[in-house]
Length: 401
Image 1 (cartoon, rainbow, N blue to C red):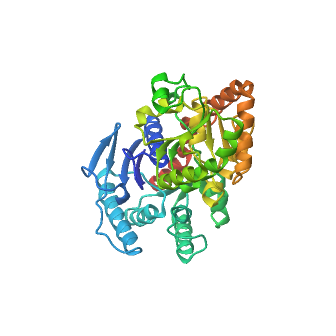
Image 2 (image 1 turned 120 degrees about the horizontal axis):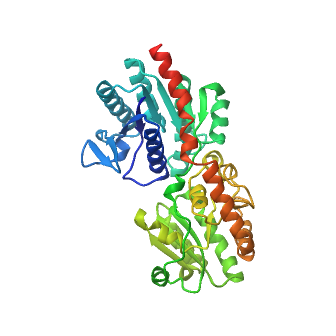
Image 3 (image 1 turned 90 degrees about the horizontal axis):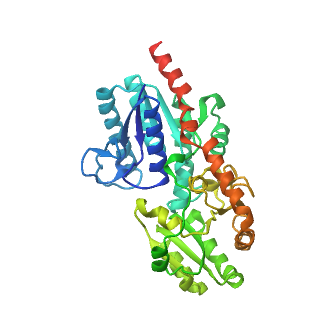
């Protein structure tokens, strides 16, 4: 089985998208399949047109000349299609596997029709919903409706669709796509790649100014949908009840400046630690400093439909967390068993959930064990990637037959 994956971007860039991709590719290779990998111009400027990263070879697409919105996307799709056709003639894949956004699916469909290769499309989130969060459009705008129509157009023309969770599956079926044409490949973790949480490094703890503190924390990218502004809104009330609390925010992103300004306005800046981005190899040392993680995602289409990786990664490490009750979290988290859910958008509910968790540490060992068992037995990449096999074989048998 030879699969050409068409990607928005890939490692060495770090994102939930690239980590999921790398896990899928490694597990597919463990099954004995040959995988090839093409990234779109969204990868940015690269050192070479072919790069080896962590044992995986990535083919790159040259950046087209800059252009106005609309023209830029057309140029990107033409460039991706040309690279798909070039690589397909050389590598002779059995399947073209496009990953969201639709800017990858449309070139794959055109190339697949031209070359007689089956095309599958994996949707991790809808392009139009991501654009709303990035602030480049609003829900229901002309651009939003056009983009949604493009996604639906692509879904009706591919040979099979994959998606990452039940929320997205329901949305796709509601667009008129037959359920039989759709398979869920759930988000998961490589359990062996995560160590159970360890003792906090005392040197790092002293450097961060956390000695004697109880630490609430978040590790990741500071996007608006993550709800870190809500976490800051809840923090003064938490400090009133638990003066020893400190908030450790590890990472960076578009909201960092706003969050620092908000901390100043709330008068809690001296109780917050912004580490900036840290090397991936060092992340576990920072996780070890945190007593309780917070995932306060805001409720919007993106977070209601899409399941994140962070709670699964926390479970794999035996870490405790509170999380908003958006749909993506409810699909992953068993409230009171593997984590604690609170009402999305409510700073009071977030504060109450944190205080309840801190007041009942006797529950923590059972919750740690339940989370770890969940990822070991259910949400691991071996289980998830096995769901590709039947679809790939059916499509390639149809072609060869």
